[in-house]
Length: 315
Image (tube, rainbow, N blue to C red):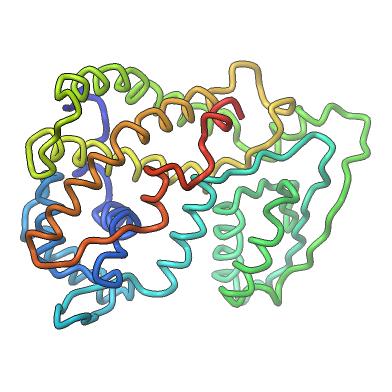
């Protein structure tokens, strides 16, 4: 089922979709997918086999995928660096922490020589992906709960030699909300949440009606399961961007009508409906290709092992 407005897979980068697929279903066969499995999964997303093979070849050259073999089955797995970044992102998706007004701030002060300005760009990119805002040249700020992630990430990327870390309180008499609006582009982020709501906000009722019509009997290899898979994977791929953009600031610091809570509620409702059905389709496909099915950390949310956003949807 498509509404006609959701991002079609062709509009999403194939690499983004591939990483989502590995994250969701990659524990099967120790995270190794034969090309036939990738062709089948992408085929369900409307992407043909030549495009899949071209994507796999490109990502292997770029070090995103590595050739692997398990139990006699040859295929590809995500590189360790990509897998680590994805697992970190999963934690931010399924267990986000919203900071409190009284919490201290993390400051990262950095200085990179002009001769290494490419490293400066890399450093800024990494900090932005962790939810840091910009106070000024060489000064980044974020809620204190992301500091440990920043320390780990920058050390892992070899960027820690350019930075100093501080934990601080805001002592100015100026309204903190007005400063936050300068440090982060809240208007752009709110617009992205609004776009997500416009695309997916009404889909919950439509999917509920379609799933209810099956009276609990769903063929994992049938059209409904395939449609759920084809809807869920791109939706999750779109949603995966938000944890890297949203610093989860206290609601008291954010503009009135902030769209994130409503967007999160829509995402979690669709995740609860579609994740189990999409998983059933994926595992049936894996079994049909002779790959032993399994589960992964991200997909465990379907069975309630992650903290429910029911309590987070208002955050």
